[in-house]
Amino acid sequence: MPTPLVVSDVAKSFTMHLRDGIRLPVVANVSFSIKAGECAVLGGPSGAGKSSILKMVYGNYAVDHGQIIVPYGDRLVDLATADPRTVLGVRRDMIGYVSQFLRTVPRVSALDVVAEPLVARGIDRTEARDKAAALLGGLNLPERLWSLPPATFSGGEQQRVNIARGFITDHPILLLDEPTASLDAKNREVVVSMIRGKKAAGIAMLGIFHDEDVREAVADRIIDVTAFAVQSEAA
Amino acid sequence: MSDTPLLKVRDLSKFYGSRIGCQNVSFELWPGEVLAIVGESGSGKTTLLNCLATRLAPSAGSVEYRMRDGQFRDLYRLSEAERRFLMRTDWGFVHQNPADGLRMTVSAGANVGERLMAIGDRHYGNIRATATDWLGRVEIASDRIDDQPRAFSGGMRQRLQIARNLVTNPRLVFMDEPTGGLDVSVQARLLDLLRGLVSDLGLAAIVVTHDLAVARLLSHRMMVMKDGHIVETGLTDRVLDDPQAPYTQLLVSSILQV
Image (cartoon, rainbow over all chains, first blue to last red; front, side):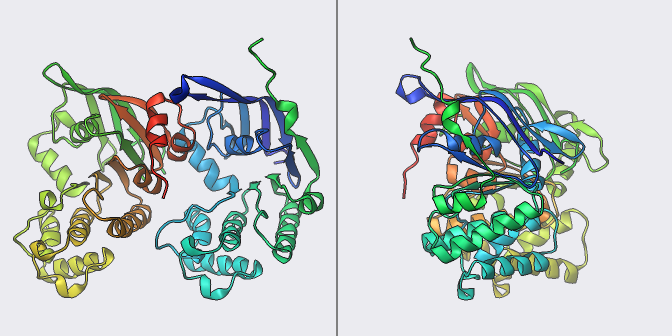
């Protein structure tokens, strides 16, 4: 799988039906691909469409135009047009995602939140929990928190749960939406070395990092999102 | 998830005189998939659910179900005996009001055991043991097994109704506002329980709800209904995070932030 992710000619806009159908163009002509073992970083100011690109690749945002091609089983899938079942399958087996904020579920412990992607792939629960514990330990999350639901955790604690959950699987593609935003220097360093570990394992990564030090440390390439800005179409 | 759907719905419509209940609804449901039908009161979501679950005869269209032998059968061409057997064994139906799905004057254990007896279980000890096990799984203490649901709180009644429905290992469960009348802390517990059971048992489910948070938590896929029509359908997080239809945008933007 030398190039697990190919994005070609993707366009995205939002139509605000509650605001007289006003159309907000976000990006157009987005084309790039990511090789195995490569970490590409989306660059550009806030509002340029970095998160939107990440969310389209995860199937979380609809795509107006273009293709997002990912190998799945023995075929290639276009996530821009794939049906929901296929998108869920691709997420289970191909694409991991570390979001900026953790969506917590009542009563589910941090350990189980982290273990869940493995359990969903049919790994034994005990084994999945062991791996989750190792990751949370590595990220310096105090052990007394592991059995608690993360709803009451601090921002940095929640983010570490989120990171552990995203990194626990060996998905060939990993999307990172500001994974280090609310972490202290020591834990940022841990995440940098985890990203390097994924690179060495041949994982293709696409990320957003506002922290310059982290970006310098992990990025093989910057994809300048301002190049995908939509030219004013009114004129 | 297997490659064959469990349920195939084609152009299903229900009219009440000249009024539309639901119109031209088509979709497929796969094993292990949870589908949420959302929309406001009067949008036709419960009408649709009842048409799917053979509780209400549709005016037009077909609903085909893959039986345990692998054959698809049109639900509205089944004999009454076949239909009843299906509802007792392979299906569950969780009502918004537990009193509609429970027998309020027999014990909790008997409410669960009754479904087992309906599929031919006759050994009292086994039935009681299974009932006790299921009460535990829905977090009802075993010393309440001989109490009648009349003596239970709303949340306990709803959990008992779920146990009664799941005890026969159904493949498909219909739920009509399963957390409807419950206060939020009780709701959270029930949702978490349902989420766990649905994924552990690999159940397919169709959940009608007006609560988008319930849809987000439980479902893989969503259909948004308005005035009897499906206005948007797709992956649950896609529909909620990037709604396309004007009505869906209105629904999503109307959620109060806590």
